Length: 122
Image (cartoon, rainbow, N blue to C red; front, side, top):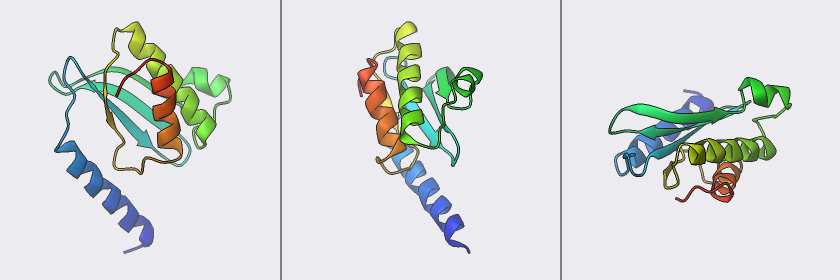
């Protein structure tokens, strides 16, 4: 087994373990983050209804036109601001933060800080 597969398996294990403890509700949906090498994706999910309320990513056409690189902290910050703006438009202010098994560091931290600056509380 390669080191890369081991890292992926450990991240998946941490994600499953953390998802046991929290879930998104109608009053407080879950802000889920997925990080790939080139992009960062986030969505706000109501787990009770099983639907995505809003989403944002560095791979959207508007972000690509603005030359946003989702593989660095600046791109993650712009995505965090975008998800906060879209959530506030839908009346969502309180969320549960799901880091997806990743460390709260680097791009994940920048996205979370930008979402807080944009008006989300978690």
